[in-house]
Image 1 (cartoon, rainbow, N blue to C red):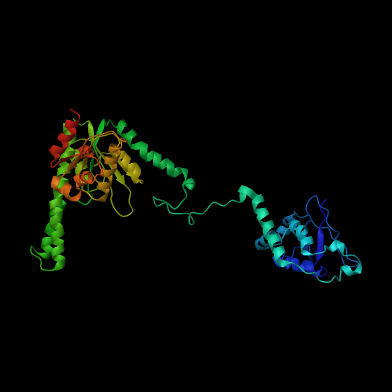
Image 2: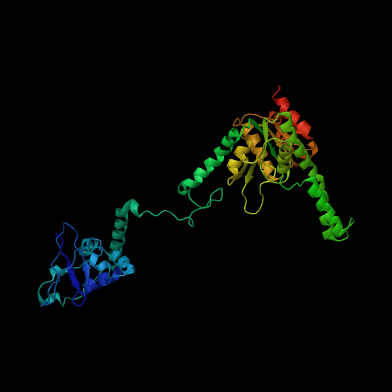
Length: 413
């Protein structure tokens, strides 16, 4: 049976008041003037010590951990409730009382009960008991009290995400799976029997645009500019004109794929400008199917206008985009490009080298001297970093015709 021990604020022994203050002041509850402690279940509580003539007012029972009664919850603030919950439970107080040299109020009898002299209190021991009790309560609450770290406190992962993997929403996973499967399903429904994928720089303009930019630079700075700004602008314009020849080759290659396959093969690219646009444009203008796997970026790249209706896909994830670009391709043609093109090239070479992808013809389109200048492939083998046989995973082609011939001959062997 639980019996409440009512310690009147005006009559409580000094040791009891000090014991309460050592941990934290207990907020005054509606049935003042008292601070309430509850006796634990199964233990008999000492009789309350009351001043002469005082009457004990009935009060709601309290849980051993000082949970507030329903009547009190509405009367105290949330902060007061939190403070009360942190007070030392009576279980701990009673357990350590003998060790502290504290005499419970029930052991003080007669008139001396109200005039009892202060007894020494071991404050460190009482604080330790309070901490031990708090830990016990925390463990008792179990899993329900476990807090999941917020995204702000989480680490940043390899892909830039700031959330723990187990917290990833299912919608994001569903989107990943959808990007992986949807394009292949749509291509089958639209009668595509095979694909040839073209990679290359998004920065190489068409010959028409390159010439227009060069003419504009000449008109502004003259054919032989004298200023540093003019010289730089004209030099860059000339470089774009030279590079635009690869846009033209990609355009011719796209047309050849459609014509030589009788329209059975679709031309696939990353769907963006530059070399990708050139290949799509060639297939589109030849009457074939032109597929674009565009990547959504915050600052650049939108789908080019030479994509077959229904065959333009927007990806949010580079991984699923790259997988679709190579998936089911009968040939892979790499034109001059930057980091993205090199990333895609070396990923495919690694997959074939390790047997994780079927070997299909890989053609590096452009002057062989150009490729060997930016990537000294034989040096890899010379340094013992790859085997000489790995150099047979790809071949070179300087024209669109040579590139198509390399793919075609692979299947005639």
